[in-house]
View: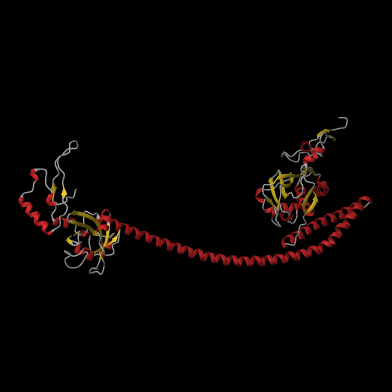
Length: 556
């Protein structure tokens, strides 16, 4: 399509399409009442290779046809006087004939450059390539201002004439109904009908989305209300439970305190019984006492020792539970502590012909900052349990090693290493399901254990609490029917062994160890066990760098 400057000047290049005189008269009559509307030029003839040389023919559009194609258009001249309007514009703007009136009295531009009621050619020239949004100055019968949009088409420059190709500015059927219009009132060429239908579809989607959002919000609010109610119920239940636990703890503390007082009262005469029976046993060995009387005294002494152990456990547990149990951390000679425990347990397990084997790392420090008495109690409890559950003529292994810490802090004190105490026996073992149970107070692995071996079930519980107070941890590993191993790890607080300094002093030193060859019976277990320990092992020699020679007799 092209726009001719003046329809009267448009001619055809083909004589068969030239207008006759009668047509010229009709066209002149039309121009006297209507502005020079742009013609639509129809290009005919020619090929892709050789374009036609002559000018293409033009076909004029009548004013009535323009009004039908652009039912909401307005044509105005250089003075903004309205020359022509579309057939349907009266549906939007009420009033008398718009012809001859100034366009600024009818419409005002709201975008893209608002004119605020004043029309200027400079603003129109800028907006010529954009969609223009307009609004009626007055209101219609529905007390609303008509809103339209469209484009600016320049019909001619001399005389200057402009056409506003307009159509209603609506997005959906609701807005169309508010303007008292129907789909038939929309121009076909502007695709406005498709836009309205699309807007209506979008509006329906928005309504559906809003409905779903509202349902979602209602569901969330309902769930939040239920959660809040449930939370309040749980909070109330927790408060009641806390009060019940506090009451139970106070009652338990009072019972423990009462039991501890009773145990303390029992302990005083019990010490006298144990002491006197021990003296009588010593006399029975030196004098010719009746064997029946000696057995009775031995039974009294054994029962007194057992009762004393029970009373001691109850007292310790009561102190631990009441929080009055204190540990005395101070520098302690580790070797003296271990020797004391080993000597006591070795004497205790002699009755079952059990050997206590020690495996001490050469890197053990001489001084360790800990509570020596409580450490002895921990080891004594573990070794005592091992002796109780070990078979006759078997062994118990006590290993003490220095290992690297897997944590930055062990207990409350930072440390560069950990001292690991391991007690292993080759008795009946413990089932894995009972690993946690055995550390509970008044609990044992099974009823058989309680019936056969006796005890209060407080030993391991007290041991666990003591280890925690010392800043360490305790664990158990076992294979039922083969072995049981308890491991205690404590922070190595204090000075470590200066291996380099000792190695320097032992440089070029030769140590000869003469010991008779021993043959031990390991028939008590089919499980492979650790080898025998030696006073000076190859490991010690390797660490401190001296020469070690081991012989079975001196001449060798």
